[in-house]
Length: 138
Image (cartoon, rainbow, N blue to C red):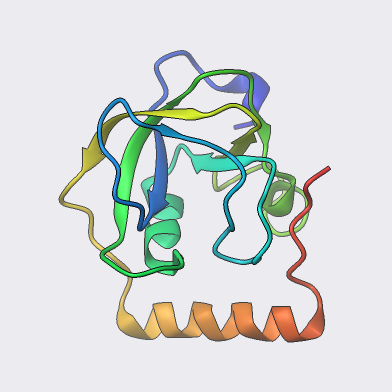
């Protein structure tokens, strides 16, 4: 599903370790899980699995959280996943320069196994060392 094809009423998620609540806004300008620079987009997904990875890989202390969010402005497909790794946007991942409004929280999400998380962290570290982890922010 591409951004232009997202049906009205689609539920969007954002995984993080940020301590936020309903009605708060998640904005751009923060470091991602994969890059230490502030980003001009905020990223989100229509799949719980992608948000789970976000919550598990988020930088910082505290527990991972998955928020239900709604975009406050236009959004587009995330080119970092759609073009590079999952053609066709199988992960239903998007980004926006506009904030996301938190409308709820998924409390009962189930994370990946510790082995899967460790493997993903090792893969991300390897990509960083190879210089292939750059986030497209055009």
